[in-house]
Length: 244
Image 1 (cartoon, rainbow, N blue to C red):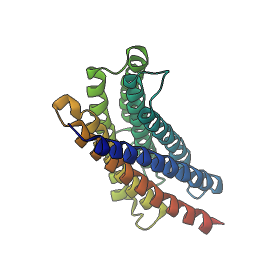
Image 2: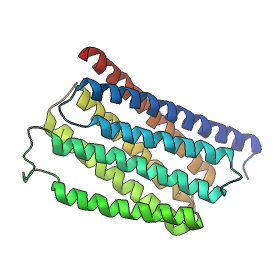
Image 3: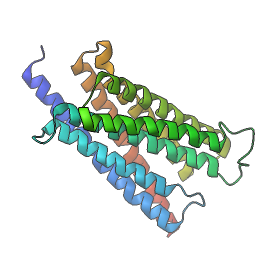
Image 4: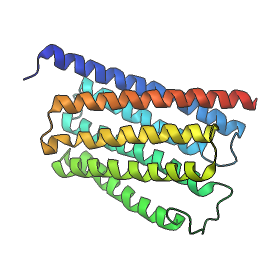
């Protein structure tokens, strides 16, 4: 059994990780919105980033609220809401990468070189979103279940891999090294990797992983995600200043 001081320090560290993630998402939202306003890219990507960062802030709020506890919702319900918002965060980051991939000006939308046709990609996303919606309804109605935890873990990894594949494909074809697009792709690949790993670890209890180990690893991935977003925000700020 873990010592109370160790458990307490772990909870504090995770709470602070959510605070840092909230701030990182907020700052990134501001500079993404400014880039959109300045029209720094011909591709409409910044609004996707703004929405994704907004969901990231919601995820951080639910995460912190889960640690503080609530008299209105059960612990299982709070955990479920936190996990669902985390999955939505991953999904929206992935959708922004998909949108960037298909909207690059040099690409023929019907080209055989694409990873997946745009129409099929949207159908796949609709199927995933349907699963997430059902998961959300289940969490709200009856709380967190083993089946929901398993689906959430698998979906987190699947959608993170989906977004990473589009980001990597764009990097390979765009020849945008050193640009703000490349910075966006590199950071989002890193963030999706961290969030996908955190989502998978959240289901670790189902395979017998120690809860303290899972919590500690997830905290590390949260901090890493926040760090990548902060560096992205700094790059976006420089891009805005250069456009003035």
